[in-house]
Image (cartoon, rainbow, N blue to C red; front, side, top):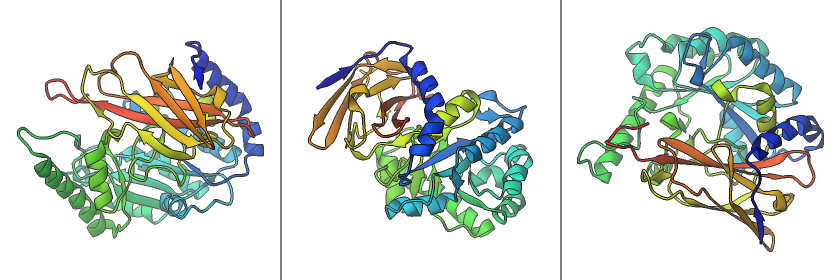
Length: 363
């Protein structure tokens, strides 16, 4: 058994090292069996900073993606390849936007169109139907669709889908949530002829009942925890790297898009919804050991290293980690990384958690 407990600033040192090593990682990476998905919201200088990227900075992101040797593919093509465990001809990346804001059309679309890059917009049709001031129109979505955009489901009303109404049973919640998702899909089909089964969780929030509902309806679902995707990823909880706000810096973005996906065997705990104030969950991550320098595996909570134990059992690694205190209110996550033995880059896995609201108020 190996126990990793690193200094508080190790995460930031790791990011700096990985940024310096990313170019070498590109040259050495020949296994194109994974992909990276980026997530944006607003592309604007005047929208909330936490979910925005400036138009000029977005252009810098696209320049970086090209310099790093990625092919930008339509999201449905990436999912099809992952489901069939097929490789890509070169490193693959998808660009996604959540919520369908007008700034996507005004500031992102012209540059994406000029570069002939495909992208995906997850929209909540209620905002379009009611013509909210900062929302895209059906006509604008149709125009972008004709130039490489995939339009997909983000629920109809963009509610906290985990939230139950007063005295609502699990079955009643399930029926109400299913109706919202299906109404959204129907509006997308009516206006744009959309028939794909791609869904992004509002706020990136999900738990086991919601995942099960999406799976029963035939959806591949996307969240907001970080990490690359591969054939071993959970198809109802696919990670995406947020690339706006504090996550928009070019150096850290270069690190993230050059990270590697663990070959996942199993993960625990099964549910990401937690009781406020309860002990932090114990993460149990089982992965294939091939190419993982497991002696340097480290997990983090909100950027701070947490006690991490690694046990090698035959050709697998059992990674255990747990934060010592209750989780912060709202959404948080564990991130785990380990160096590659053959490449100058790191494997990356993220497990999200959501605390139940206090007094019914979601964070």
